[in-house]
Amino acid sequence: MNKFANIYRLGVKELRILLRDPVLIVLIIWTFSGGIYSIATTASMELHNAPIAVVDEDQSQLSRRIINAFYGPYFKTSESIDRDGIDPGMDGGKYTFVVDIPPDFERDLLADRQPAIQVNVDATMVSQAFIGSSYIQNITSGEINEFVQGFRGESLLPIGLVVRTKFNPNRNSAWFGSVMEVINNITLLSIILTGAAVIREREHGTLEHLLVMPLTPFEIMMAKIWAMGLVVLTAAALSLHFMVQGVLGVPVAGSVGLFLFGAMLHLFSAAAMGIFMGTVSRSMPQLGLLMILVILPLQMLSGGITPHDSMPKVVQAIMALAPTTHFVSFAQAILYRGAGFDLVWPSFLAIIAIGSVFFMAALILFRRSINVTA
Image (cartoon, rainbow, N blue to C red; front, side, top):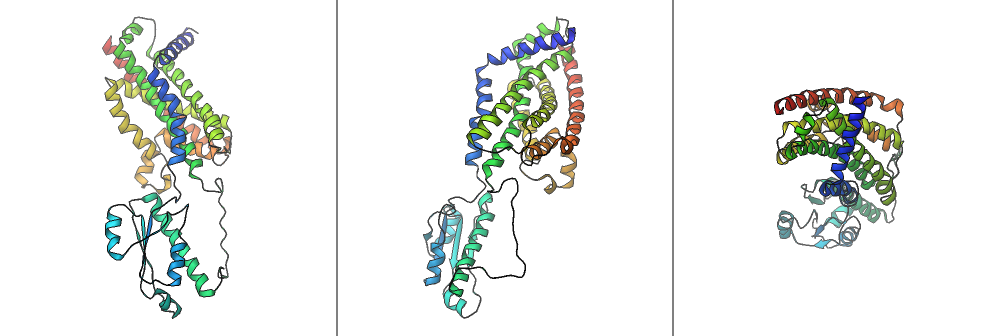
């Protein structure tokens, strides 16, 4: 009982110190409010206002119909340029797409000579390049078919392809971006807060005060983990309710309680990683540099940005040992697809096992650091 009382009092002390740090308070509030809103509303994966230019060398009725078919909100108003303006416009980043309609295109089409339209794409705009080229192909094909047939309609095929989009019918990137930002911020802040708590103890000289008390390294670590974990978990729950579901109007398919329970398990392992890095680092700048090397690969390779199955087998095997991979897996399953405990329990067990290893490693290193300081 004395151990639990010590852990509780030390955790309350961590919370009081955090409340006196306005920088971290502002960071937490912004991360789970304005940061999520900005990512969800500005980082669009759909084609929107893409700059396009057209080289009309045909000057026919069909070419004008194709040009007039490129309109908002997918494309900006198309600009008419000549062939000499293609390379300067593409090199200068002025146009993402340039459509070149060759001379005598309409005449060759009616004569069944199968002329081709050239589409130049700036592939450095990755999110729009592939989507936009497909849009341009569909738009031009529709206009050509309508012109040749004399009416707008689709040719009948022996097999009909019907696409049904599940979990995000409108394919709205805000639904994906906002939830993924909450998931990423849970990992980010849990590591930052616990690592900063260890560095703060060392820089303020309060670590020596703890050493003269009847406390164990286990109690000190657990106090930091539960206090910082409580802050992050509370902020995540409020963000899901007010920002994601309220302001952004993103539906959550599964149980928020089940997600928060899994997030609590993940916080244990992420906070242990934060203590480990805080023990290795000797100052806040060192901690910041170390976090860049650790957090960026964890978030980029966890499956939230690129599907896990699309990565090389070696990377998949390595990332299977990272808690973020399993956290992103069950978080997406619960919040996007409404999965229950019967589907996500293997990820829970994996996080518990990985978190225990991280905690033991952090405890050993933290105990050695305390002994050296003593």
